[in-house]
Amino acid sequence: MFRKIIYPLVSGFCLQLSLSGADLLKPYTGPSVPGVDTSTLTGKVMAGYQGWFNCEGDGADLGWTHWSRHKDQTFGPGNVTVDLWPDVSEYDPDELYETGFRFEDGAAAKVFSSYNKKTVLRHFAWMRDYGIDGAFVQRFANGLRDPTKKAHKDEVLSHAREGANRNGRAYAVMYDLSGLPKGGTKLVETDWRELRDKMQITNDPAYLNHKGKPVVTVWGIGFMDGGKPRAYTLKECYELVRFLKADGCTVMLGVPTGWRTLDRDCAKDPLMHEI
Image (cartoon, rainbow, N blue to C red; front, side):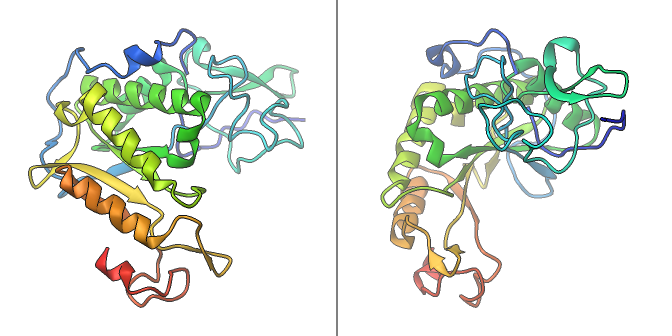
């Protein structure tokens, strides 16, 4: 039996009727209100916005991704990947999706989807209300190879852009390299060119800058998994950072805890320090 107790869940984000891919990648022309100073990262309280929750029926065709262990099966007892239940008390009915869990009265427990525009805008409004300056919108690079997954990422980023502009928040792109094969960092270069050229994301008033340059974060450089280096190499990461800096970006890195001493979870390679 499922009790009516609400637990907080960090991270999250649905739209029944989505824009086409071409529309999503157009420059933003909607309202933009003044708010946080987007010219600097200094003094900012920024959140990491994964935007990776999907629900059956949300329009993304990704099933119950990141809610359930088996995304093609109903999110319910025995098919769970989350540790906490989200507080959905402030969501509207068109933002919620029925799960296989039931309350004591038999009603279906519901969760949100990251694909819903209304939900993404709500999250940025919450950031405004509770003093969070903005978000690093994560783009998991391994999914850029799959058109369906990439469409979801474009949807989330487009709505995050609108949410930041409408609520006076900052946003920036964060690439997560986890799961990439050897040579996979080229996907990031191609994707960044598309965001820059089609979305003109670096010209967006809500996009975060630092020292006069747009901020791009690359997470996953130099990690060891099970004592072995990842398939994509440090040399690739070095070239990716060089590419982004040559493109006029301020590059922020996500690195292992042992990066200074090249031990523990970090690759024992001096190139790490050059990067």
